[in-house]
Image 1 (cartoon, each protein chain N blue to C red):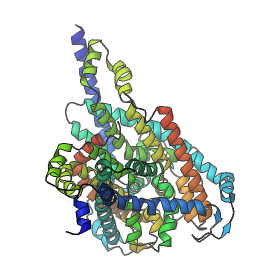
Image 2 (spheres, helix red, strand yellow; image 1 turned 30 degrees about the vertical axis):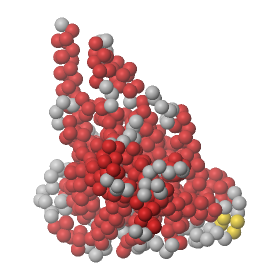
Image 3 (tube, rainbow over the protein chains, first blue to last red; image 1 turned 180 degrees about the vertical axis):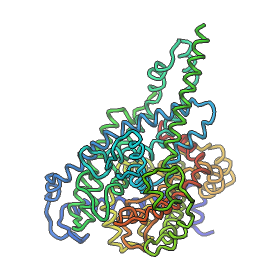
Image 4 (cartoon, rainbow over the protein chains, first blue to last red; image 1 turned 120 degrees about the horizontal axis):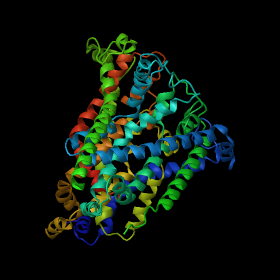
Length: 306
Length: 282
């Protein structure tokens, strides 16, 4: 038996086993996550047009340009508006669905499956249905047909900015796609609440809203925190539906560009401006890390409940 | 008296609950219905101001037209998506499964430091790293190649995290029985742990497969050439093109979601169980 085999067989050399199990993953993470990030930070201090090799050192110039760039700032504002719509609505919808499904006596699995099914659908496909069928700006669109029954004129959902109907299209598409997933998280949380608590509440004569407010919601606190955090992080990464709903024949309107759409056009659009793109990516990463940490601290994430 | 009143209130509440659930279910299924309805219609049926629940005749020929359309490389894109999703799913299961088990079970002095190093990447939003990742992958010369589409997606910190949490709760007695036989970690992992974790593995596999099949931003960035298009890219180009063939676009989208919906219907039980066991919401 060769020595390497002897070492692996003996239960003494755990370090080697640890390296065999964890090594490939850590190596991949270093090469495909950490190296790009460090490279990007490096590039963000340089002028790098049409090239991924830095040319001229500009110090913090790219960062200042980005912070002064009104389009970049408005992309952050777009994110804030989007988050203000999507986070609370999805939260309430998924919690509501979970409460309804959880208390359903029959066909529980059926309803759970129906609400969860959109998780399998892509943002591209959802955008297509929303843009060309439900919220099509012409008369034959489903929404405009329904409005027509009430004698309301067709609304050009995606092509007007005043009033900004496009928000309704964008937010409902994402709601449909993600509510079911968060519903599952809430269902898991609901199942962990001990039935004896509900019995005790029933003996005390608590019903309906009182049970929800003083028992269910406090018991779901940890789940709610996780859901809020995930919703916010996912909203920050919104790209697919904005891109597919609003761009047409190579054009994208300057309004309603969330940060990633903005970065996509800045770094990979005509200019291939990797210096500014990298600086923007670094700023966004710092922002989201700050928000995540801040929210975690605010809501007590990581603190042991018991 | 009070009991009778409550039970009557319960009954009303329960009927109301089912009404809301039913309306919700119709709304959630409606987009799928529209997709299939439009895919089997003619252009005239779709754009008719006189909205009908069903198209006048079902045009199955749309399906054949789609695959014969030289402008959209549908078959090629489907094959690319399938290869990418299968390789990524198998890769993530092996790489993250091993890493999760190692982190959970093999005592190593710096295991905690390694774990925090991995968790730290969870804080970095994956999509924000697309600029630096593009910079790296393009300098490797992997633009518009399957390598470029597959390899960077093989290292999923979240999957490793979930596997670790799961393996921490894996019953130790089973492993100890194997260890007595003189089987080292490798053998224990493949012969005892993996066969007894099929449900959780199925959950991670489904989630990874869906994520990979539905990915859009990374393929958009890294695969400008038609030869490397995924099905989502093909759909998107179709969708944002100047002239759109509506029935074909809808039939293409139906084809694109069909494999996932079928898989989802069979495997969703495992996802639900996986989510419940993963401790995401604990």
